[in-house]
Image (cartoon, rainbow, N blue to C red):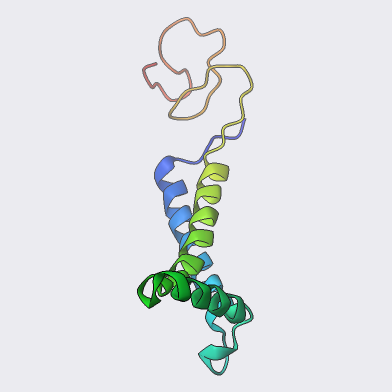
Length: 117
């Protein structure tokens, strides 16, 4: 059985995935290379911004780019954490420390690492 990644390593990998996703969405929205005005998604963001600004004012429309950068990145981070913490259930009890299968043990200790169960 493959041991699931510990929560703190999975959280660290999720934070790294979040940062990479924010940078990737910033490159898609704002552009890369020359000017910040050449992003492939900037036209769509500007259309949404203008529609929001018309109905609720420019202050609320300013958050469109922030949402466009952070929401997809947050979804990537949550999905990364979920995939790394996924546990394969084989129907047996496993030691929480080393992952050893505890089938047929006679005392409440892991025979592999000695952890109390």
